[in-house]
Length: 251
Image 1: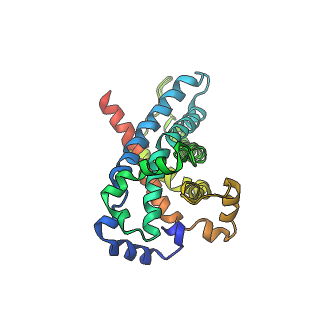
Image 2: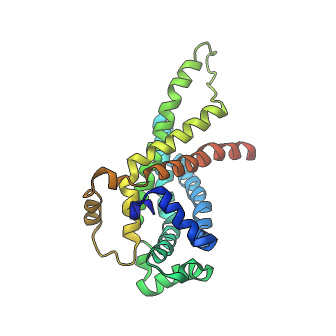
Image 3: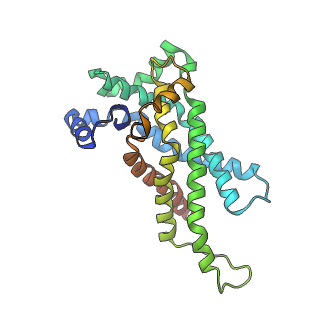
């Protein structure tokens, strides 16, 4: 909403509160739930595929960053239909459609889009989303590994040959939060572009829409970046830190 209107945060919060619970939660069921669960699923699938494809000679930071690219691209393709449905619900609300806050509207939106616009509508913005997610995770893994490098170097002194440096939970937690928060400022232009591509009345080319984002200068381009940064920090922390903890528990 901040990206769309540029309104101050207090005004946006008051607007959401005025809609009540149905307005605030519009699109959360089922698309928000599906987005949240499928992000981790496709991320893990992409990372596993990348681990099998990459040669053993690629290790350390290079391997981590490469796996981030694989995971992000898989995630971008897999969640595109759910993201499209969520975007269309929010677009309908912004246009004053009072029915858009109902569960029935949310559940039927994707079927209606396919019936009226064809299957190609589901793939609208998919390439951009895959590239954006790959870029996101390449940057996030690079930042995290860069922050961890001096920690490993400092703790490696005095270790026995063959002994590996172990990062503490605190190390993993703050580096994951930082990686997510900082990465937003790299991919925000693409983050603004994607909803425009997925809107029903999107007739402009990707390049035309991309150029329009730069007309208002950096303030317009990075509108909503603070909120996005907080969201991305928590999201990355969950996938990197909490995900690793769950993986260790399963093992």
